[in-house]
Length: 102
Image 1 (cartoon, rainbow, N blue to C red):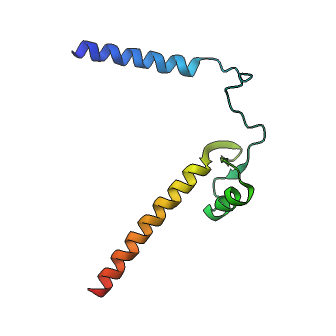
Image 2 (cartoon, rainbow, N blue to C red):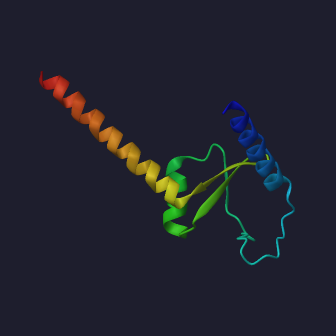
Image 3 (cartoon, one colour):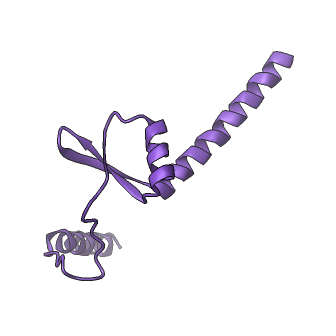
């Protein structure tokens, strides 16, 4: 059993290495490439990011620090995180009001 698991681990490692080492054909129409990505600085406030997604109707932002891409924020992820934070904030506020009444 242990030997089978280690064999699977080696196969998985090989698949992952092959994936990352494979050349990318940027002319392939299945690959989405944004020829004019929208960039924000790492320290950009969430309110400004919300404004950009809302007013410009863009689907994603690249986050840059000192000219190096540090990450990406998609509109869907941003909305999901905001909703989750709003729910947490509402629960905390409700618990605080309950404690004040007790």
